[in-house]
Length: 482
Figure 1 (cartoon, helix red, strand yellow):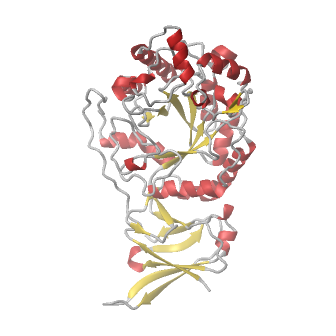
Figure 2: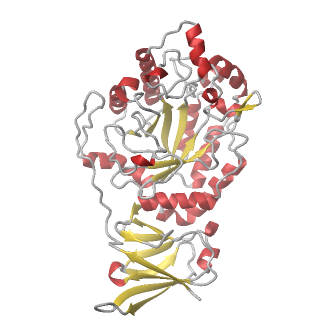
Figure 3: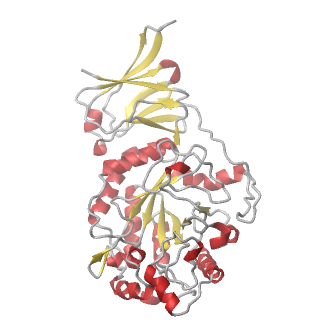
């Protein structure tokens, strides 16, 4: 028998509009003003909204430790604070293990292109304070250690492969002696680092640390061409905004150097894990987009630009114990969820000490890329379908005037029948992307109603659409008859 699927789609082929914060917006003691208009902001954000898919790269001293310190497991990029290590002890063990091979950034960029990514974001400095760029502010850097400016290598490689360039920059710093974590007692900090500073009589001075932070950011903005994204990480409680990072001045400096730059919201207190913040309007003075972490919000964030950052395994940086990886179909589903709910997906790689990507992670990226070669038109430039009602597990996106239906992953033994109210869809030649010989039968049917018959457009989709699809994940295209 055929599998019946009833679908009700409201305003299926209409445009997608959302309410936005009124701009320009005045600043205050904790926020820089937003001087652009909504129209100017939309133009600035346009490429990012269309790109949909980016590569995140967590790489640093922790990559060589690979999840353990002298045989003791302790996480990856958080290993220094997880094990309470002072920066001297941590660096003495980690520095000799950090050996980026020549050309590693080129391989990251090639992989991003193969996967169908449109932008890349590299950790210029993580919480351990080790800089992957040529900086005059410290000798705790790849340039001082190895004579290698990893950020330059990354930016050059990314642009050569057609990628927009982004940098993750930690405002937290477990290395700099002036950094004052006591602004927020719950903020992560290595126990032995605090003890070492106390024993040496080194005072905390957040004013001095902010000068250091701003100087490093200025270097990043002026040494590597035009950056497209700054991905700040992160704030908590009172450790945010003006008090912690002099965020208004930092934001205004970034905008003065590069008016087109796009920034996330983590200079201000935000948790990507906190579902209670879902649906809360983003204050655009805090950043251009919000960043749910390791999850995709069930309803997206209507009216808000957002990006889910996700891992292929469980960890961000390389960890030899992180071997349970998501299947390519799981990542494809996340891409579909982001497209259907109005967000972007930033998918992470954690290179090894030599910069190579773990084989399993690379395999996932390349298989996702094969799916994107066939189905990318349903993801890039997509918007949510407004007022759409679909059965559980079914989703849709709209690109210009074409609607794309994402069925759940399944293995139907028989043809699948879906019905859409006739007045809600106007389509010709429904098809399965990448399967020109897969014929979808379309007919008008009526059923008795309380007052008058209900008219539907009925589509019969062969079961082969699933078996012949890349990774078993077909996409159905409904072109507008007009």
